[in-house]
Image 1 (cartoon, rainbow, N blue to C red):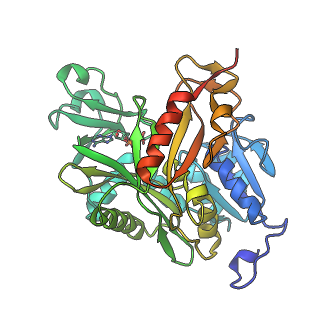
Image 2: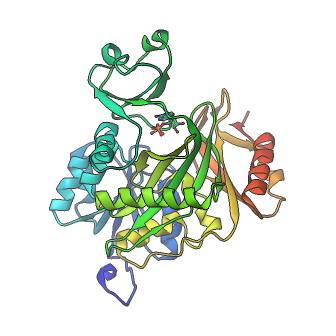
Image 3: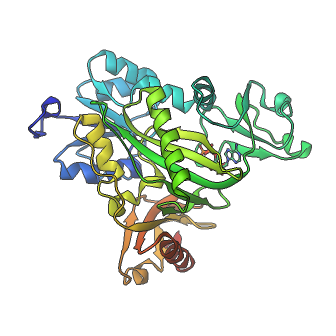
Length: 386
Ligand code: ADP
């Protein structure tokens, strides 16, 4: 394998890299991998997932089944993930067999339990909202007073598994499972910083991004760079780096932050992989987050993260009642505009709330990019074909 060599680069067919998960993050990483002549093999339960038709080798299997993960990965050179909900037991076994597994399975296990993740921040002096861990969601949800944010320790994503309990009445609908209860933050802005750290120890951060959420708690659009002061930008990057360093993390870590009304930066949570808040890096930054992930886990020099243009990224999310073959109403007309970059993820079926694609718009300033994204949002709807 050429990755260990310092000066030369050649990934022949003998170099086998595997991805656990075949969703859109894997798909965009395959696009970056082709530029490096890397071959990617994918494991996913869904034979119609976004990677199925473009992976060099696709295997259908359960990501949480340790045996399936081991059988799939044992002959690979490098294994990485595009989703954290995978069998860390299987990955740990692969690592013991000599497969290079990055991010480390111990990091995946720490992060995918929101309870252990939060405790890690508390133990390492990383700023985050105060919290308690509870076993019995219903009985203990009022133990911290109201309002409080209840999060399932495992299994939640895209806002599912998170709810704000404001009243005693709400408490009747509390999740009945081991949970994290945290103080509600008075949020000024939701920010994120993507950090790459390579096997060589080299580390780089991307400029801070600002996310705006819709009613379903999915990122609706984001603006980059974030409209924040230089001091807040520096603090956000410093806090994000401190998480990577405290964990001794290798790979790509997306650090979701809150800027509260008092001007404090708090860590909300991290994702050990490419992230929605980094999609604009494909067109707007020197190196995309997807290529950066590959560089980090292969020990190649990290690419330039500087932003070349202001950008906004609009998710294309299945509209109300959508259920069937996807149709992007208004998108074809929008493509007449300059600086607009569509990304459709190749999902066979659109459903309400499902992320189907995104559009990146480049503009002269973050405000102008946001205005263009908002106009697009009004003209494009993600529905099903009749
Ligand atoms: P998920 O992993 O499902 O994305 P998050 O932990 O990121 O869940 O929470 C989803 C959203 O809920 C956040 O983006 C934020 O808008 C809101 N939220 C989460 N934690 C808090 C908090 N402590 N205070 C206020 N709002 C919160």
